Length: 411
Image: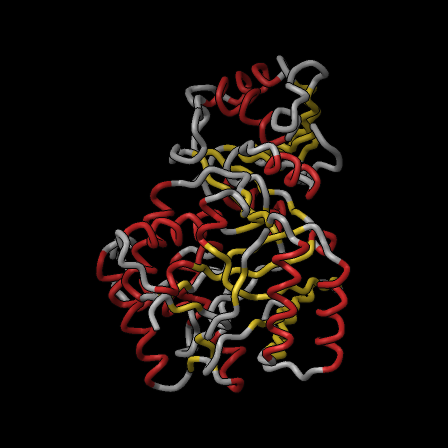
């Protein structure tokens, strides 16, 4: 069963909460982070994307970047922008985007559960991205990135959360610049804390990583790096648990830097082996059903429909991200491993089809593919069977903000 614990969060003074809260480090480039944090000395991006305070040409994985993150975190504490909770607590975090709300419990989850597959995975991780978080946690002593976990909803947990949020005042309540509302309640009553712990231990057999495979993997590897002399806080990592019936997965799209020596005509011919190819002109094509994709090249869109019999019907093979890999990326573009091939990049569906067009029109990329999203049921089925999706198969929105609740691995 799932083991969770309350923790003494490092969190902002209420008057600073909106200014501290920042988008997750892994959804912004360094340039985007610098723009986001401009004029805001309280932005948590100074800690999670600390290269923004260093010369522009610095390698984002250089030791100086992690040292700067540590210095900035210490400065936030010294200036009393952030403070440490006096006792271990749970927190309830509600996000509202476009009128739809989702509410989860912020806690720490056991690294043992991650290692023993009580916390289930559905993606492989990329070694370079793992190492980045390992370096960041080790240097700062802080888990700043929240791992987004899902679980099959439990009526008793739903009832507890609903009662608490309706009868208690929140500690943070603001609408961010992107229109997403963030509200957090603290659960510091010992009886309530025990209730939450027991409900999960008794009624939640497993949890599933929805977003944050690299953050979870790096927390496990940081603990292992202590070689037995483990700080107590390193046995757990920062998570927020959401009931699956409140969640929806968005598409996660691909852009590719070259055509692997094909020209446009040759690419279209190669695609016709496994797809019907229907020109769409300038109008962006967003898939509306499984086994349908969009392709953007040379300022034109195409609708691609996978032909019957061209893909496997097992839980992994039937995914559109798998069909893309097996029938397009590997045979046509010679992209065998999406985790390590530098010619491919990933664009979250929240950015829209316009982002795909922009990456191609700029000349940075040659072709883009829009995909139909994976479902929660598919994610659970794959994780339950200990199978692995292709990398970057799922994109969840809204995103938890960094900086509102941080877990320190040292007391």
